[in-house]
Length: 133
Image 1: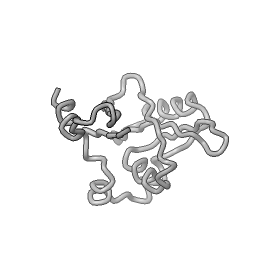
Image 2 (image 1 turned 45 degrees about the horizontal axis):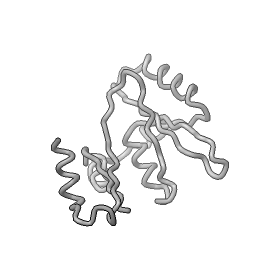
Image 3 (image 1 turned 90 degrees about the horizontal axis):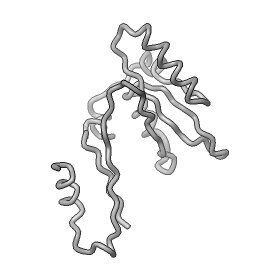
Image 4 (image 1 turned 180 degrees about the vertical axis):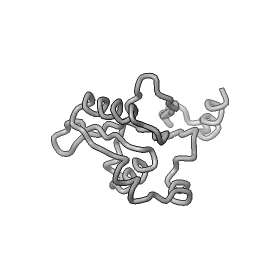
């Protein structure tokens, strides 16, 4: 089985992040917070947005907490989140973005196909065709 991960917005790749972003200590200190319930995380975002004069956009992500498998919720600035994400070992990078009602979002696709059932498929061309449609 071949797994193709498609990210239409390449601006958030690790390489471009490392080359284009330098995080300040102040931003790191104030841009992330972890909660044990989704409701608490959403409440935090709502309160922060009420007093938001800086244009800060906060995102909500969900992780499985090891080893008990419970979820935890991280509210973060996108730059800080990406920085922290790439600090994790590759086998721990299982994160879900929680789409918040009435907030801007981007659509991502994870395309998979069985090579043995589709031996003549050209994965990169198929991905390009999918994006163009």
